[in-house]
Image 1 (tube, rainbow, N blue to C red):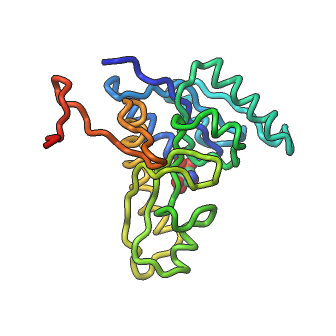
Image 2: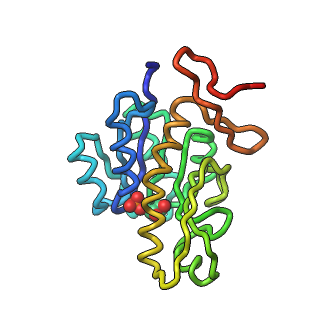
Amino acid sequence: MSQRRRTAILISGRGSNMAALLAAAADPAYPAEIALVLSNRADAAGLARAAEAGIPTVVVESRRFGKDRAGFEAAMEAELAAHGIGLIALAGFMRVLTEGFTRRWSGRMLNIHPSLLPAFPGLDTHAHALAAGVRLHGCTVHLVTPGVDEGPIVAQAAVPVLAGDTEETLAHRVLAEEHRLYPAALGWLASGRLRLQEGRAVVDPAPGPSGESLRNPG
Ligand code: GRF
């Protein structure tokens, strides 16, 4: 197969989506190679999981930079460059990125968000979904643009909201879908099937065994 795309996963915490991406990328046929896990917090639990899987990890502590977001991002860029990174997957990365950073990585950086965007951007999505009384909730993978949780939608998965749900039970149901959806979406990006068309994300059909499209163009 063609060269796997060297991908960094950026985390701040537990790293369950990171683990799902690592599991997918353990298959040599998966089009992304996870070449770096970068955390902005030294205490992120995901770092140990990544190290156990033999993935290079690095900490760029955002709090060391205070309000200097450009300095923080320059330090991250240096690590990304040193590891030859071409794609980024944000996975529970809790820092808002500057316009400059998002523009430099435009079309090459994905995020997963625990709601059916554009509903419930920002934090505490499960609490907001319960408070709004929606019957369907879910998760979204999107390309990252300067507006937080606003980039072109790549993939979504929905789950029912059930009577008696708490934030925890709902989060648990959504997270199972996140772990399924994110590896699929990163695979599309890494294999070149994901492109932007008039500001929307388009996923091209997978080529067949001999390279032809599986979808009948007629
Ligand atoms: C996930 O719910 C993800 O959608 C959101 O942050 C959470 C991270 O969880 N962006 P984990 O660290 O991947 O377990």
